[in-house]
Structures are given as structure tokens and as C-alpha cells.
Length: 96
Image (cartoon, rainbow, N blue to C red; front, side, top):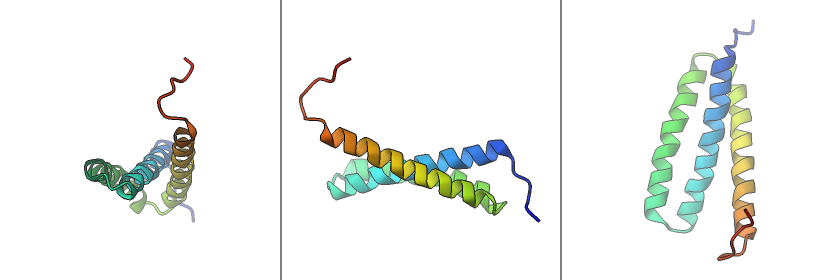
């Protein structure tokens, strides 16, 4: 028997875990660059976001699938954006 799924909760879990993974990537980037304040800030945001997803899907195991989808999306998008910003030469204005 598969429990019922609330679409709003499922969407919230996807968004929360996507944001959590994006923030985790930023946290890891700040740690690798040895930037203490940004690392600490990203760490606190990471825990705040992850709490929503954990609380949401512990009541219903089906939401773990939505958490995995959000996790994949968050990591993929944040790494894509980091690669794009790293490829941009510093000091050059981007066309508007």
C-alpha cells in the first residue's frame, strides 16, 4: 500500500532539498576557499533548509523520492552556475 501524496508537500520537499544541496555546494566552496564567515553562514542556512525536508518526509517515506529528486536538481544547477561564473573573466562587464 502506497501512502497518499500531498502535491504541495512533495513540491516543497523538492524545492527544499534542491535549495539545501545548492547551499551545501556553496558551503563546500567557501570551506575549500577557507572563507570562515561565508562557510559558517552557508552552514547555518543549510541546516535551516534541511530541517523542512526532513520533517516533511519522515511522516511519509514516499517523500524521500521527492527529496532525492530535489537533491539531484540542487547539486546539478548550483555546480552549473559555479562553472559558468568561474569561466567568466574577472573585471569584464557582462552585456546587459
